[in-house]
Image 1 (cartoon, rainbow, N blue to C red):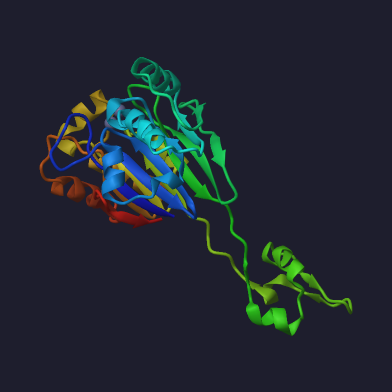
Image 2 (cartoon, rainbow, N blue to C red):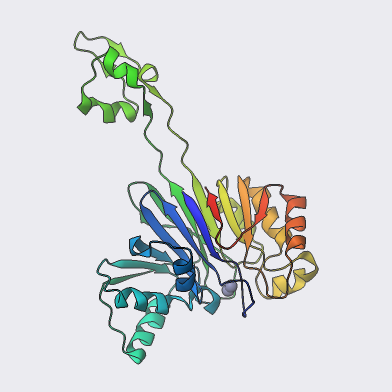
Length: 301
Ligand SMILES: [Zn+2]
Ligand SMILES: [Zn+2]
């Protein structure tokens, strides 16, 4: 999986930062996470092939996460898109989109599928051959959910030379990759470990957009390879963070530490900070493998 950051800002406008949005690429699939104002400009600027986009996940209905969606959906239509598009969000998105389309007279050239999910329980909301997506209930002023992308276990690797040694027919290979032993025509059984090497471990990415510090989040994102966690404030604004149901950089790092994640990316920075060095310092004091998300940056999961 490869994550591309489109925006790291929050709240009002700030020169040099875009509103929250990210692209996660997993195999041939592209997933858009949140769609703040200006997201389609960022997609365009970064050359993302967004005709391949089939799924959009919206964490909550605050404007800095969703006000770019209606524009993006309309632009797809102007380009005569025909592929259906699935939307995942807490309740209310259908009303927002359909009302705007009705008032503005927008008729789409493609089908839109709304999947409004409960934001206060962890459940699986999407699955394909390669991965699953789970909700991660967050603590915010309105129903808000993060998204956990978890790859499914992958097949073991076949040892090419063994195919020749035992004249293994092609149709038997999927079962061997799944872990089966091989029975030869003379009745001998060759154990799987002689024929294959272990599969690559499945990877996981968690996106936690807007949330106050919540221990429950750490439980849900335990062990993920990459965690994006909002870090709107620094520690001197801890009261304001609690009041507005946001986190400080140190709190984001504490979640990463408790959850034992591989790496932490911080984002959703308040416009009051020109410079983000203190965010980084505070986070690294708690969890070493922390970085500031950079717009246009690519992060391997
Ligand atoms: Zn926000
Ligand atoms: Zn919010």
